[in-house]
Length: 113
Image (cartoon, rainbow, N blue to C red; front, side, top):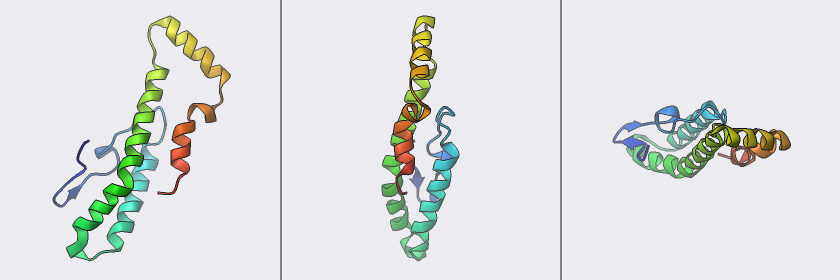
């Protein structure tokens, strides 16, 4: 979604950025977002909640959007059609490790939240 909040409502997890199951990171991202939101809210009183939300968005947006885009790219690679492209992709996948295939997502997931 382009906007994750309106007034007192803030979306996190799949409500704000659903992930395809290909990368297996949806639940992890949701838990990270919950932890970051907790961290930001714990630092403010009720008058400063809008500021905490702004800080939450600054901390999360780039990471979530990047991992989501990478997840979608993996899905496209894994569901190539027609059959000759699928066969070529399968041959390529046999030549690389899981770490190489998921490398960009793994690097993002290893960074501090």
